[in-house]
Image 1 (tube, helix red, strand yellow):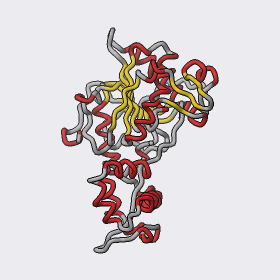
Image 2: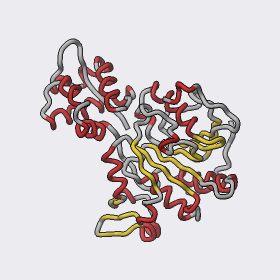
Image 3: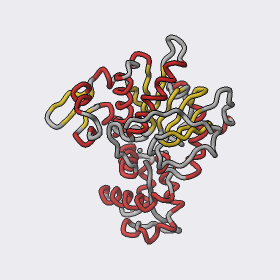
Image 4: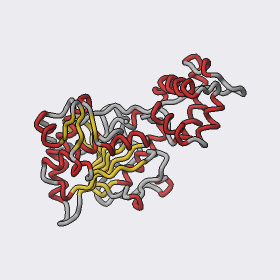
Amino acid sequence: MRRAPAKVRSSRVALTANRSGRDEGVENISGAVLSEAGSLVARIADKIGMSVAASRKQAAVSAIRRLMASRGLNHVSSLLDLIDADEDLKEELIDEVTVGETHFFRGPAQFDLVRDTILPELRRSRPMGSPIRIWSLGCASGEEPYSLAILCEEEGLSNIVEIAASDISRKALIDAASAEYGEWSLRNTNECWRHRYFLQSGSRYRLRPDLARRVRLTKVALGADALPAPQSGLADFDLILCRNVLVYLDAAAVRRIARQLFACLVEDGWLMTAPTDPPLWKHAPFETSITSAGVVYRRPISSQEGPADDRC
């Protein structure tokens, strides 16, 4: 295990109910049937390209009940029948059951690690003219990738950094594309940067268009979509941030995603998760580093990718 020389200055799932040979109405989708809900939860999750951690099933019950009530659906079977035919319903379900809380520079110690250790090392190791490629997974409404864009601008790296950002929610990506935020999203952003990088209109702040254009937004169902995906530009990353995402997924999905993320990194590339996310070293041959900002993972030089069936 390698200790990184860090110098520190300082998301999305849940689902529902029960089927035992009969349809259950909205009033029966509650904690009382939660122990019997596993198979139905898995069916709904599979339909929308998600998985569900056991700890999130109670929250899922509430989310499904809200959605069914708002749509006037009295039976779970009706919801299951409509998901495939109604894309808007699927998106509404995704938005109900995912957790999208985020803000600029969330997890400041990790951003300090990126600034003080990771970016300088990547800058030194890049061949002349080769870009630094970064991927923000579970980007929600865009605060994380745009924080990275600001950080790279501050470090004079904007011209050599490419940033991709992905989320399962179409609505979240539309919000991210607007790059407009309120005070709550900027609560961890200093006043100097607010004035330098945002255009204020009343209580709203729009990210400077030149910075927003540096982030490429893509829809990805993590764990369901095949990765790496070179044809979509989702491969060969120097740094991947997948923070506050894996904690919401079931164990099987985490195992699969760990291998996918490993395969998406270049040799010696970095992966950062959140302190609350499950450990990944058991599931892929990462080199693990303990830093003052928490655990980070690296793909060792000359390592081999996992079996081809781990890439789907």
